Figure 1 (spheres, rainbow, N blue to C red):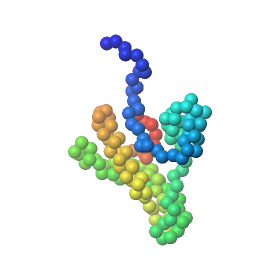
Figure 2: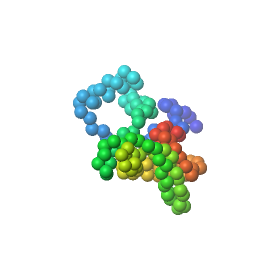
Figure 3: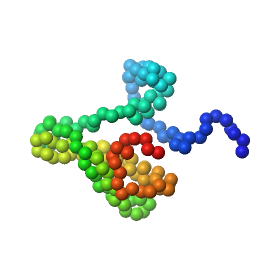
Figure 4: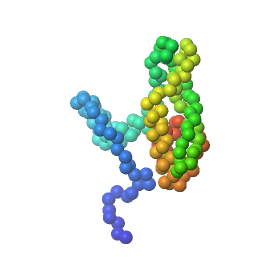
Length: 149
């Protein structure tokens, strides 16, 4: 078959897009200028580099149900029940960041983070099934924050 030219096909093509991001005029200018300085004007590469190199510590929730504002992050294991190809599977997600009250000791999750975890895990299991990869019994939370495939 003749070579069509152009860029070679990637083993991991970029087929997904982020939703539209609303910016002020100044934010748009800032991102475009920084992308030019650091990534030759490629805004997508600039955003990917930022995400890959972001090593900040998660912020705890602001207030405990006891009224305390003295909270810190702890890492807890989360046990998930998954439906993988019609079969119930258990997955332990290790090291999920949670907020713990320094006064009463209560550990609190973040509902929106849990929704995002569920969505990402579902997508990951589908990818593993489609690529004939093993379905693990446990995963590190940090694996969801990195580029692994």
